[in-house]
Amino acid sequence: MSAVTAPAIHLIFSHRWQADILPARPVILPMRHFVYPHQAEEVERGALEVLIRPSAEDGQPFLATCALGFRDPAVPTGLWSCPNPEEICAVSGGYAYMIDTAAPERFTMLPCRPVLEVRAAIAENLLLFVGHLAILAWGRDGDAWQSERLSSEGVTITAIDGGVLRGLGWDLRTDKETNFALDLRTGLRVP
Image (cartoon, rainbow, N blue to C red; front, side, top):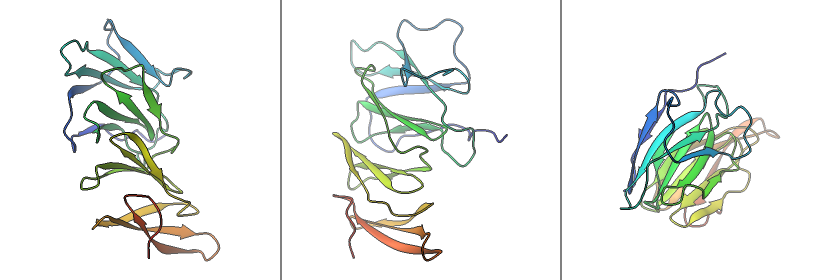
């Protein structure tokens, strides 16, 4: 069985929190502890443990335990700052969790499973999540758009420039990679 990719912290956008990835769950838990998703079974096995300190004056630190998606080096694990400075994105073995650090009981587990790549489109204020079939964009106000199906198995971003995302997707019918271009404001295809 392959090991999970070593977690990393990517501070692309400005943020109002501090976070540390812990090597294991602390023996003594902080007063506030949140498990994502709530209904996860055996969440401890391989979970990403993150100690988060919100910047708000009354913000208490909390432990975020994020269930592991896949134990595969091909999927990311780590933390990303988000277009909304109060949010943190935690990815654990390709499962992505968007957590409101000011109110950690509010979170979204992204439907793209597994996430294969996380990439920022800074000029458009988006965090992009690449899956096997499509791309999901997360903006300051949450879910911005999800592309149509771009591939039968495997999406590759080749460039982000001038508000357009360009990439390749493998087409099952033709058995070859085809080019696509998306408008980053809408997620719709452009010529």
